[in-house]
Image (cartoon, rainbow, N blue to C red):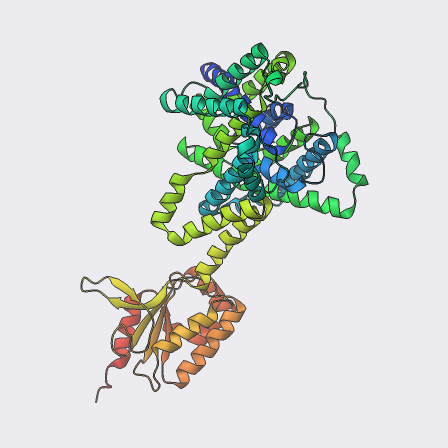
Length: 561
């Protein structure tokens, strides 16, 4: 295996450019990963750990030059939602569960690579992914409202939590509310008028300085408290506790890990593809699975939590000027310096400011513009996106990702089950139009050209027979030939072949010829294997529609005296 493919080729000028981009990215990304650790329910310092070894691991084993693999809101929410109630957030047992989930996720991703399952990413449509991330945005935003307002809540279910926050508004802590709103306004104004300035970093540094100078904690504004200094201790001792768990607990962790793996596979592949296409480069999703697996193993090894290919952080890296994994490696070095020498001031960071950073992340996940575009172009797909978002908020993140996969696959199956089909009729300019199949709808007197827009298999064979039978009604029929335009029919299975043979027999008994035109080579091989070529007859298999029409017209001529 070629290591560090995402760095090569690397020239001196490019290396300096990417190294500078890595420093800028670290400045912008550190406040974000602190927020992601909050979403995951982990100690704040573990967010910094996700920018250390996981970044280097993906750079070593992945193929994408742009993808940033670190803590991410979607997988953080899946983990927190899945293990909520099993351990106290940020406690030792909770941290151990995070390491176990990261290891199991790494194993699942490695198995996916060995089985070459990178194609699974193709089955999560953009529509339901937008809905899923929107639901996560609402869930995450609701989860930090209590900290931003200084209101106590007991529930961890978004709907109930929102109700508790609204009920507790009269008891909100004014200094906490003021600080939260000030930070939100400051960052949003900088995004609007000075987008190159790392507003989140400036806000966090200013809040830490103000908190230390004016003793925010003494005035009732909660702070995150002491943050562990130094590089993470390496080890997998947490896995020892896995042997002590009962079957139900292990099944829970496997379910959470599988959900994380699906999200990582799909989101990372989509992000890597977008940036590879943008810069006219190639990306190998299966090779990236090695990198994603290694990154999660590194996260577990260094006491962190599950990591993912992040679209927001990848965009930040590109905006900073990075064009290779050299930028990510530099970011890891900068974070290492922060862990060694600069964790002391972090203890003064107000919790509400960290909550505001998370709330800003949540706002970016709620893509209202994309939802409006979906609504304008495809109201049905918009309904699917909204349904996915509602399930995430009301039921849970894991259920949301499962629904997203099922709905995406169901749309594919529905297209094959109910394809575009009908009778071809000629326009005045010689082109074809497709009209619904019905009795007395013909291409020309005595002839029906019937088009079926999908492969013919056991589920849609009945629909095929129903529509062909419709066009020859009433019996005895004036239709003498039915020619199937098979251009879009790429496959024929055993069940459909038997149904087709029955149709051929019934039409022959009714005095109607069945023929096929524009049969693709792969369908032709299926016809041969299922003995349909001999059943239909080689003289009733035409290369072009016009050949079929000519043969029909020739057969319709009265015999010469």
